[in-house]
Length: 307
Image 1 (cartoon, rainbow, N blue to C red):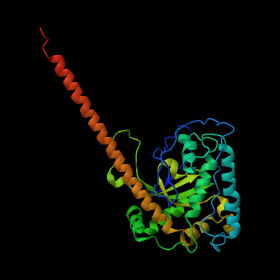
Image 2 (image 1 turned 180 degrees about the vertical axis):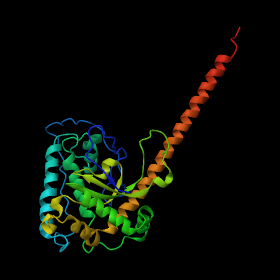
Image 3 (image 1 turned 120 degrees about the vertical axis):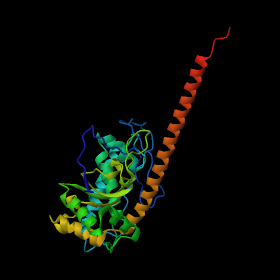
């Protein structure tokens, strides 16, 4: 089973995002380092703060009709998305989060499952940006050759992937998201080399998450998402979520965006592997140096005392 259902974690949840968080699809680097602070000091009152902006979708609001109406986008982007951004700006004003990139704020406020107050607005703002970039007018169709081959490798067939993705989106209870992700499989194993077999690394997976949770905080590299909160589809499809999901995959998804994100994810996975190997070599060298020092000290202690 490829799909992974993620429940809202308690404070002791083991989820982590210690490698960082993806940038938008056109940026050169997919991941950055993030802050792990559990609380944030208030800055001086005279500090100039930077407001996070509300980016418009990469298409006119009526460009997805008849599959997604202008009215839906006016409410979904113009009201819901705007509210997340506005509320987040109010929550972080005058704190150490103010002025950070949105991805940094998502990771920091997730706080390893012990959410800080601004997490939901930060994650929802990021999720919606990613969702708009996942669609285009006259979308759908067939993925690019490289992406299609990877889908076939990891799911068995494109039809099997499509069924798994649709099922994940349809069965996410209540509000949430379904995602196609690239699993680089960097485990939290300290200085050890990743112990999982290579065939378990660098593969595609389907993940569904509740509410504002997203793959950034699970250390997966997101490639595609669909919003299954009711406000994403109710004006056009009422309670027919499966119809909305089918239309999204057949008429709206931007496989070009997914392919671009996949290339960035592969680069990030390769960089992670190099970094892991470098750390492993450093540990080996330190161990050899420690052993050499111990042998030297042992030989000194065994030497006869001078008369």
